[in-house]
Length: 54
Image 1 (cartoon, rainbow, N blue to C red):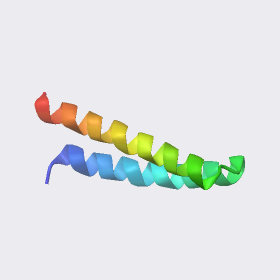
Image 2: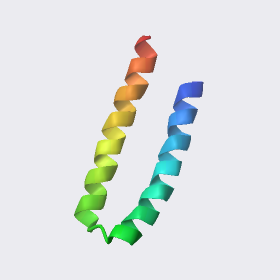
Image 3: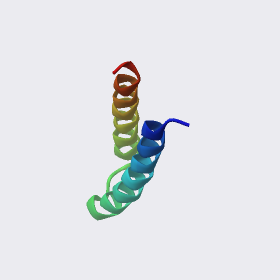
């Protein structure tokens, strides 16, 4: 397994934990929560794709 992919999975778990705390603090709606997660997934896939090329 690629080391960069393992790092991205770890970052995703850390992000999900932090987002859950922020969601409770800001009273984020489920739609806003899904929007943030979708944007995060797209950004992480783009970063991972760049690491494959370079």
